[in-house]
Length: 164
Image (tube, rainbow, N blue to C red):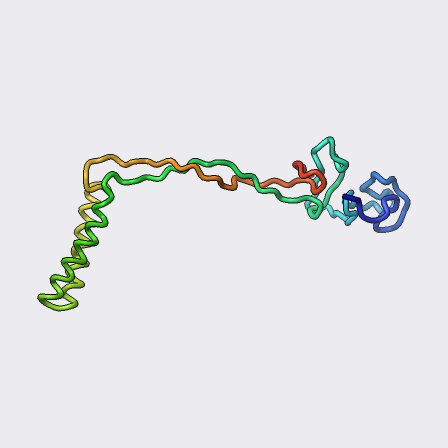
């Protein structure tokens, strides 16, 4: 990648400066070494940390750096109840009881019976600590590739850039 603009003149005042400079001694401004855009004190300022790069140690603006996400394998633990089939059984039993009561009495009585059956099933599950049986909880470890962070890199070499 080539540098932008005349490298031997200040981008603001046109004063003759060294081609490797990023500061003008006449107008006292700082500018990005790569794109030669003015960099103020309040703006984010970076410098390349790769000694093999042409931009090493030079002032870079935020536009001349890129944010690269960092991915890593993360182990997540999910708890699986020992006998999880009872929760499904409670819903099926509620539906069957609701239909039977509906056939013999009325629709609203069937809905009420189904709601009562689900509540009773939930209470039984809660009393047993979330399990219908005395089986312990099974923990399942799953390895997932996730973004764990991101870092700023020099646009030239794609190696980390330091914040000044």
